[in-house]
Image 1 (tube, rainbow, N blue to C red):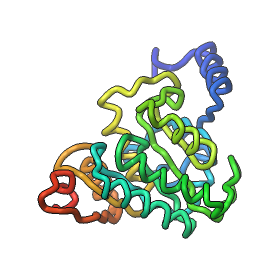
Image 2 (image 1 turned 90 degrees about the horizontal axis):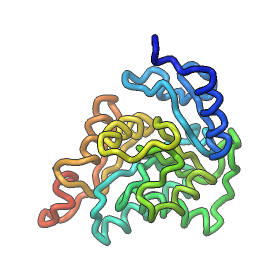
Image 3 (image 1 turned 135 degrees about the vertical axis):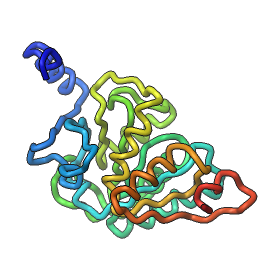
Image 4 (image 1 turned 30 degrees about the horizontal axis):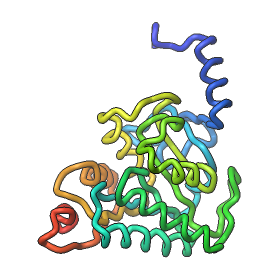
Length: 231
């Protein structure tokens, strides 16, 4: 590590910031570090989180797709995640605009309808499938801003994860990096709408590297938002 090793003062400042922002941290080798990431070839050595790490004990389905989703795509993402939640299966997504956000809105609707009441920070598995969000910025830097309520919901009722420390801005290069964690946390990855390139297809590639089943919702061949899923 050499000169890159943090000083005691820097560690103390980080601990204070985590406490002030209601964040926790785990690292490779810690008892609570996600077991499905322990042996991952591109694992992050440190993860920051809010909420319930026990959400990862549930069966997990990743839902990804384009930011410029159609009305049909938004409906499908929320419908799938609602049905999964009713069956006690967690939805993993990136909390971006479009399909990601609507996937977690489906879980939110399931919670609102009283399917069950998840317990914050409990390590027990709740009866409802919990939302799991993997984001690219620091957990105190909400992006996009319009998803602030969803970030709060996921952090309080499920699990919000990032490899980026507090204060990290949502720089473009962090999103493809984030997608490898999203893929690794999923047992199955469902692509609702995707163009032939972009973040969703990067997540598909990361899932395939890990032998994770990839499924796709077909769309109209006339719709460019479904070109990637139709492939």
